[in-house]
Image (cartoon, rainbow, N blue to C red; front, side, top):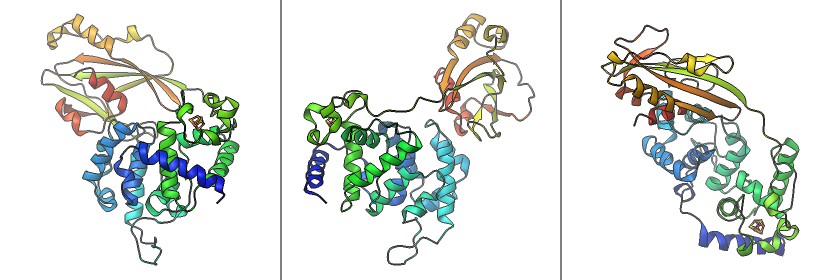
Length: 362
Ligand code: SF4
């Protein structure tokens, strides 16, 4: 390690000691808890992730308990976080771990949780970042953990404008991360650089004036900090048009169905759906309400229905959705649907979009 790097590490660790947030997954070396936190925190803010982390740790304190749960139970606990494939992979990986005794500790003892980067990386839903995070935080192994914050810090320290979300960019940034990693203290280094990116070297307005490692930052010297990192252009989003019907009887019964196709929100529940091949005439589609069947009159119903239009963005799709409340005396017979009371909706793992619509009623 050069004197130059030692000085960099010292400044970074001093900053970390005085500024880091106290987060439960940074106070433990339990690989299962660290893995849970890393999966929950992908695409999720820390404040929201914290609540889900506590929920998972208290419901499933061990990986065996998570493995023994039904998938529906895991999805219900995950409800509201979105990107449900993360929860499905978490559950699948837990089952793999619990049924596999091939992982050995450094002393050759059997261990329920994988201990090497390669074994971690082989778990469903675990990429280079998550494997590096678990390997370094749980076992103090010398692997970098490149999340969005670290990509930004590396791009700026090196004044690198290679798009980090291309395969050439990823390879290059990985090399930069390997070079910068403190191999004697990988746990401390990864915690500090991630937190530094999250709290200090911010995307829009990095606090360069008070930056502890300003002297090491090539982008600061070149005046390019705010232009970095560079991304390749985003993929175009595919538009989809959904009309949902919320039937409601005087006894507050409604219909839901489970999405079974290989598509978004597989296995989650939602109201009966019609998908339109292109943008429909939404207003013409509006079902007529029969005011005698509901405590709402037609004008109240119309106002409610007008609030139930949403645009919901997923990574590759833009969903245009409308929900229509249709009061009925009896629920119609529709294939693959389930009659439930309004209160029972809480017992089902619902899609994020359905939850958004339900918030309108609360
Ligand atoms: S000088 Fe600015 S851009 Fe460079 S590492 Fe520090 S905060 Fe980030």
